Amino acid sequence: MAKASNAERQRVSEIHEKLVRMRDARLNYSNRWDEYDRVWKMFREDRTGEDAWRANLTDTWSFATIKTAQAAFVDSKVMPVIRGHEDDDQMKARDLKDLYVDISNKGKLDLELYYARLDSFKYGMGFIKTVYIRDDRTVRAIQKFDPFKDEITYKEENLRDFDDPKTIRVSPRLILVDEMTRGSIENARYLAEIEILGYDDAKRVYSHFFKGGEKEFEERIPKSRQSSGLSEITGENKVATIADDNTRDKVDLFQSFAP
Image 1 (cartoon, one colour):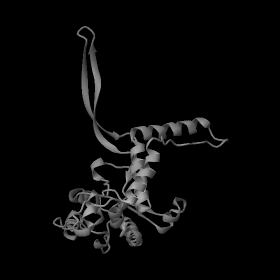
Image 2 (cartoon, rainbow, N blue to C red):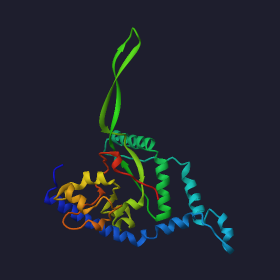
Image 3 (tube, rainbow, N blue to C red):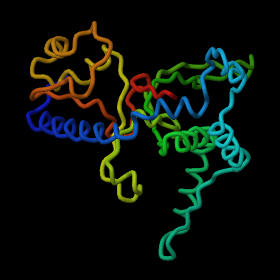
Image 4 (tube, one colour):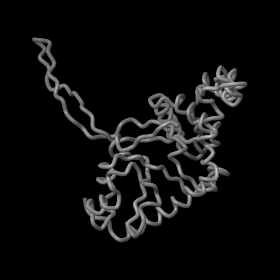
């Protein structure tokens, strides 16, 4: 892989600095998320003495309230409403709506919206995204047909192509946004998705940002360490592990998780 130019390194450095500021700003409310999880549904804990009777209470008021609110959405079918401008081609509006309906059906949008709404109830924000993943697949095509024996010979071919688009929920713990986004999505300026990579994948994808290549990457980020925070990669070679678009060149490079 070709090494990054000085301009690319400078760009990554600027992005990294923005991410650090966005992460620090998020700490004002994200440091309470674990407490929100505990309040939302109490963990089964051993209780003794006067509180022993509480061991049988698995649902808190918060949990019951959220379940009631979510129940109103379970049977509802969410479909996009797309209206073309009166001067636009109406066929384009219909095609666009059909595309989003197809994305909804194939990506199980109802389920993803359920988890996104749950995030909103618990943390005050929820995120979904439409992805268009490029991946390897094996395709069987008909090579020839023998009408006398009624036999079909297939030919297997490995293709690297884009999969069907689908909408998925992304954990708020993986999203960094600027403060204006919290007020209204229309005011959003920056949004970054933290990318979860294995060590070898991270080295393969990002080592070209280091002047010393993979060797310097291994020196700065030892494999023995479990993880590295954003601020731990310092100096002129700063790597920001973010997703700058929704195209995944390999599906196993990205892993979203539910809290």
